[in-house]
Length: 275
Image (cartoon, rainbow, N blue to C red; front, side):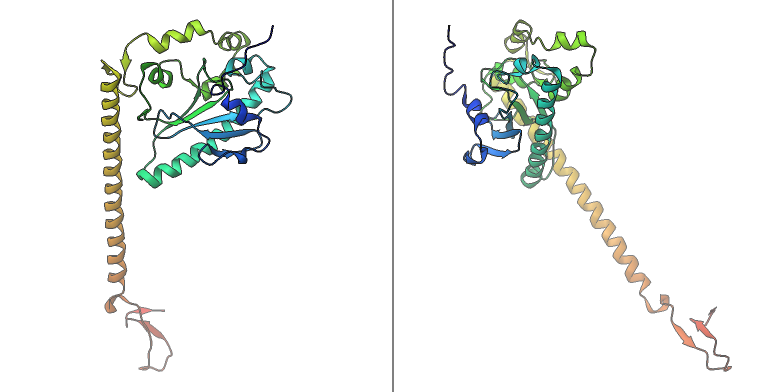
């Protein structure tokens, strides 16, 4: 019995991962790449900044081993951890790029999340790296929002997954099962709550409006901080300038003048301090 071929759009990450030279991907898709990973723009970003870090297919691993997080964690433990550490290294590089762009566009930085979905419709492992705002026109459905809610349980933070490797073997074995029956209800059941204040919303439009307001409040707070910092800097600079100007007054400047009165050759500073 043969496996049915994947739909083209579901296997697109696998095609990227198979490329010998990821640089051939258009810049509208590829952000960066390394020997072990490549990073692409999420075509349907759920935050202001949203990227996907994808492991490249290299021996001894095959496409089958990298189908999703569950298939990776079924591999030899050391091999799985190595892949995750490679993803972690690349994700931190992406984080630095995002923070630079935040400063250019918004003049301040905010948190960045890195994590996996335990159940994925796409057929190649990918790590989400996104800004902590969930403020995007592409965020339309409850299941999408809940899949990125940072504390609901469906979004598996990379640091937490890495911590499984240091836990006792029984805990590791339990966590890597990634049972769909445990995670699927998290997407559909329960209330629709703001990830920041836990306020319950009646609908996605109301939640989106609330998240928009929350981001505006964040922007206002950060601008106020920058303005206060600027004023402190201006005051400090003014104080330094005033001090320099004061020290340069003629009566404050120590001048060395020869004593011609007694022929001793001694010098005086302002006629009072003996050298």
